Length: 314
Image 1 (cartoon, one colour):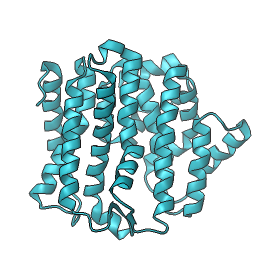
Image 2: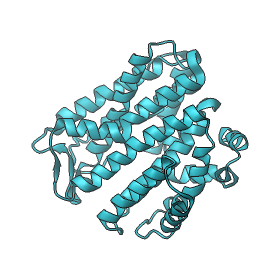
Image 3: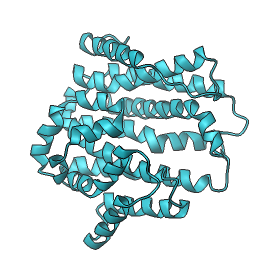
Image 4: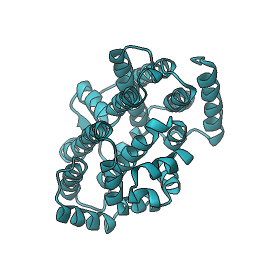
């Protein structure tokens, strides 16, 4: 991932003295494929924002830590991301994250141990880019905190609007960030389409990806006593909605200029559609978790690359 190394030299961050490529591979899974092909101007900010968001998500999911403490930690992490924490408080936060219990994934433990240097990388970003990163991370953390607090007393979301708001906070805002960052860093080289339309599609795209996650994890979440759909909701309705939003993600990618940004933006949509197809083939409605094969991932990569280079939507 030469672009990350190149970015490392530019920001002079302690984070970039570590084996960043290995860390990203450990915690990012298929999203690493997208980040690897982003234009250089966008790549560093997306990598830093992703790592910080994954760190807060790790804290949110640390079941060995009481819910109240997880919520409080997310609040402090949000203050740190926003640049509102003193040096002594930052040292205390970093020390607690390094010693956090209940995190089984080795890559996630390593990531938490690097939280302070991830912050250093964030603070090394140019002002406008840093502001965008802080904004999206604030939204994501708010969604994570809501997740913890709401399901202490509820087993379902209140209504469809709450589902859509949650999907915006943890994923739709990423589509917005991606778009604003591309326009800021690349200008007309990012897209010639109207920014309002790009932002709308980007938000819908992110929401659709999160809907796919929700539908794929219905059974697993139910075992934990939670459901991100309203009580009595029909799974088929939300599967159709997810597919529609993800298809809008393909429309989004087709409006971008340059094969790198088209590939990086379009690949998650193609993988999500493969997942939806697998759900339908298995008549999946939350009974078992569907996972697409490595061969399907490679097939999606090739078809997405062909579309990105030759400008074909499909």
